[in-house]
Length: 478
Image (tube, rainbow, N blue to C red; front, side, top):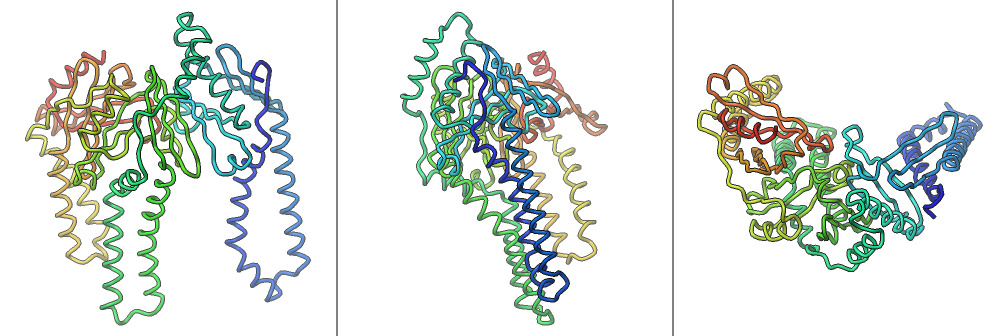
């Protein structure tokens, strides 16, 4: 099939149309009661309504026709070392992807695709311009999608190793990969533990505050009317429902999470409703993040994430390599999956004089927060801001570490959440030192390190450390 140009599966038209139909349905639902009211009052006649429905129907038909023509005119061509997408409409479009630049090959199958026996091959390249979105999404029948994924991996290996490996060698490796057991597998209880320990502290804090405020209104504000009580209940729902939704969605997303390492590639699979299967070459991993959300810190648990182009760049994707584990379990599992990366590096904590710039930064934010609430907040709120500021200064000082060796730099950061970013020198896109008149007097510096990743993981800042440490890192970077 892949020796000549081919099209996407025709179901791609339906998936593209659904996105627009979803917006139309939301608008219709939002205006449904107004429409019924206008019909009942005679402001809109039945004939006028039918004309509107007819116009909407014609618009939908034209939209589907457009997607159909675009599908007919779009071809994919797989050559020896490139993947080309051509579209010949009014304006010609051609996109060329070098196979050696592919960072991640993902196979995805949602419920709709499983019903039709189709699957989506998602391809991401090491490109900063498209770091926040998937470069290519190719929908095919499931067996053809598997073949395309296999073909791409063969070409990627041949582009990397050249004449060292024949196509038969690569096919044998891929066959071995499909039969190999996973190094790391998590039960459903492990996924539950991960989702609960990953709940952000601010979400819990906002929910508790909203509940306390609502109880105060119910118990002590006797002058309030019914609408005020409804507003109080709505405030509780506003904060609690997103937590429940986020928790449940992670349970579905990370269900049956498993990972394995074969030769130079990581294979990660997970998902209940939408099944995802990632293949990530080791040399396309730009950083590793060892993370401890607030509640995980209390439980002395760790999770590990991958920083690369492909995982975590879209809203529904979770860039996880390991779910919650104890430190011992994490080190054992990392030794199986990424033995090249040494995790347990001893770090240097910030010098005591770093408390000065940390305190100044926290004080500025506290003053801004106080000015924002001064018109309506009770005096006790300022005590809360003061207490929060003191905790932020203490944790901001004790949480931040910096370490380095001949291969990696380790940046430990955070206040309530703690995370350590492990970056190989050759993966650092930019290394910049920042200082101001206060830090210059104290002979301190702060570094910002950029890596190739989606927006959320591009920049990583250190705490305040002595200037000589950054000079040593700069020598290794250059």
